[in-house]
Length: 135
Image (cartoon, rainbow, N blue to C red; front, side, top):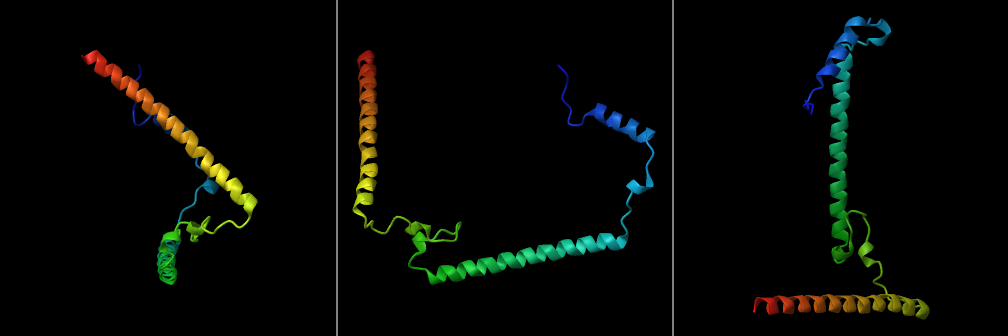
């Protein structure tokens, strides 16, 4: 099996051969002047400062909105920026929808309880068998 190297030596050799045999075209070469490099660095630093200021403003706005709704703190979701915790808290006024909701909600616990009971019975049988074998 061939050894695995972090650097592909064959690819490096091929690249070197290609570079040695090729001619560099003037229109493919761009020399950056010192002014261009300094301008790029300045723009980069300016963008970083703007991002920091924006983040600081967002934090301040979050703190202000948190102060406005201290009573509803549990229902406020910071990720979505809304009070999504209030969804489903209001009572349903339509009788048909309430009946539909109740049938959905109370149908599943029965199935869950029966599955849980079946698992418990299997566990009890297995435990009884282990106890009987050990005697």
